[in-house]
Amino acid sequence: MRALTVCTMFAVTLFQAAEPTGAAAILESLLFAFKLAPPTRIVGPPADAQRSLVKYRERDRLFKIEEHLNEIRDAWAKHFPSGSH
Picture 1 (cartoon, rainbow, N blue to C red):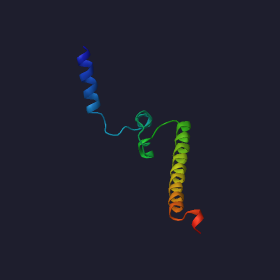
Picture 2: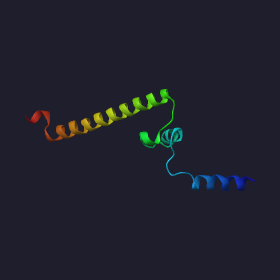
Picture 3: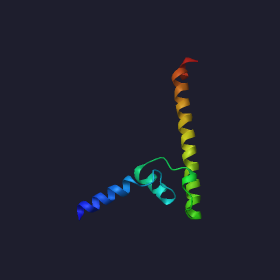
Picture 4: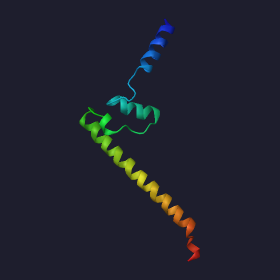
């Protein structure tokens, strides 16, 4: 019986849709630390979940901007040390 269960789980996983949608797409992102699925794949969550996703995407965007600015600041400091002016 255990072998049948394992084979069934493998078959379901094998033939599962390549990209989950809705709550499954969010769950996949959280469980496997994947990049959050695009809004076109996340259709149908309740309004409060949609608001949370919008806030999450905005924080993620701001974090990436800040990270990029830090890289620019580090490169600038490397090429123009403060004591060399």
